[in-house]
Image 1: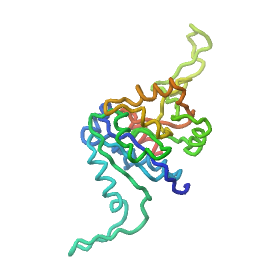
Image 2: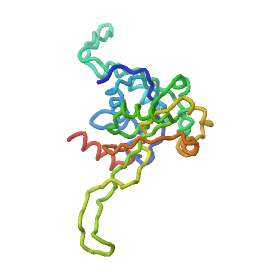
Image 3: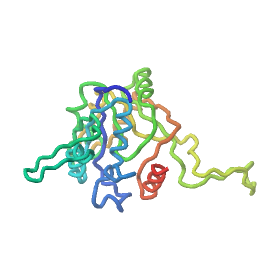
Image 4: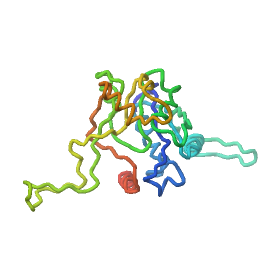
Amino acid sequence: MAGPNPIPVAILAGGLGTRLMEETMTRPKPMVEIGGRPILWHIMKHYHGYGFNHFAVAAGYKQEWIKRYFRDYYQLSRNLTIRVADGQVEAHGEQCEDWTVHVIDTGQDTNTGGRLSRLRPWLENGTFLLTYGDAVCTVDLHALMAFHRLHGRLVTMTAVRPPARFGGLFFSSEGDPIVQEFQEKPRLGEGWINGGFMVLEPRVLDYLSGDDCVFEAESLRRLAEEGQLAAYRHDQFWQSMDTLRDLRHLEQLWAA
């Protein structure tokens, strides 16, 4: 693991998660567990592995779950000795991660740009990182940072090619009924999409127009038009957790 890095990581974690309603009726999507840990924890562990340990979490829907989790994390992650007579608690055993986590209630109905805008006090002093609270990947964050600095744009996003939902059939020619190759869930060719895991300069905060601002549809589109959006291509593992099917797939990967 790399040494501590003061660059903050913003995580958008306030949406309703309606496509995963089986799990999000009672808790926010970032708190849905994979292998007994919230996907939010898995995301933060990835950043922690590269030395990033300052987080600003833009909470919203059922934000109390996220606050309680980190409030109690120190004790619940360790062994406890409890003196029942006076209620004194001593935690011992393996040390917890050295994280500083700001959990900010950015409102239940706020759009992504509005959530990011509400994190301004924690992000406006320099370069920061940004991702979503529902996707994991293996992107090399040091290489991503180097790419961002090399190209000098206001935003660098990680471009990914997610697996297709269904197996792909490949024919030798149009109209040929004989399958030449079959691939289970092939990558989507040149179908690059925004995978999150972004690097941003604080000037991006000036592109946000308020709670109704949709960061992807408004701010990123404008930045692209101005030539200020770069993409770091990541052709390895990336997986979002949008549906129950995705959750089960991630659970299988973790178990394996």
